[in-house]
Image (cartoon, rainbow, N blue to C red; front, side, top):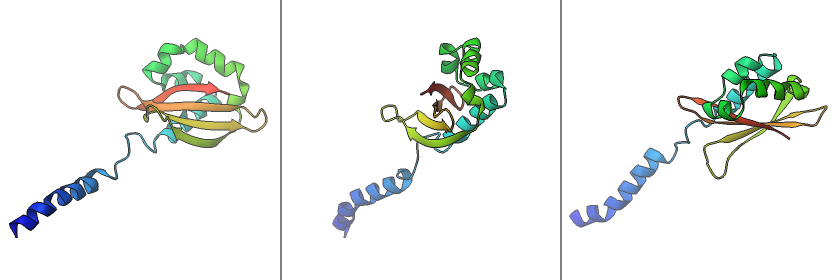
Length: 129
């Protein structure tokens, strides 16, 4: 009887670990789109300073406030209705999420990159295609 227990113990440990850890998602999953939506809404409403303030430390280090405001000004489609297209995890880092939006008239795409910052999940970058 004791030998049966010893034979099933590894299986029991494996099942317990699978049930305890198998369902967990990486931190931030599901939060990225609402963060990107809020960021774009601030831009759309002309609140570029607030939009910039809501970004990560890394975003601010490579794009200062004046440069960000200039980018928004040079891309007026950002103040038009944008349609969410897709959200994809970065294959390499598995931490960043790329949220893509399209503007119907100009056919432009903006990708808002969202990921963990020091104390929260924030916009890490953006690119216009």
